[in-house]
Length: 238
Image (tube, rainbow, N blue to C red; front, side):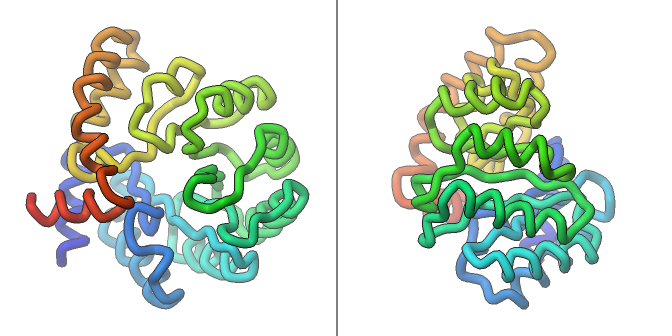
């Protein structure tokens, strides 16, 4: 019941897409059955009003393929695939991992680079190789916190990739050709985040920058403990 309510609030708040079972939440500790059930519920509830992107990454290639195929069968519009965690794959290993997952489905996939959480960074050269060689890899959620990584990705991919900020400090990546943010803050303030990005993309860079700077105190608060503890607490208060 609560998930249904939250989905409706996000849609009403002008969120452009739902990321379900991303890593701001319990996806890493759900059973595979529960994981697929939550994705299926979100797809049915949203009912094509906006895209639903399913988090189906895993440190096990086999598990990621299974979750991805189930999400695709259930009607997901795309996938969010975090780098394998703990195993610390080589760059060639990442190419093999992502190629196998994406070749197993026919829906778009967004790579997810968050080395502070996974212990495994996907290098810009690896991103470029995958984008050029795997048709349905269309974007990356870049959450390394290093602005130069986003710049190198856009340079090596010749702009032929959808770049999303994985941190709520989104304006710097928008300036490099990014098109949005996959956000923690948007869980509690979807309209604010939507408007901040829209302002930038419509040419009001000063207005967007002001919104970005004004939001820093709440962004800091949402990371005062390990994510997702603060955002879950905030949403319970709300």
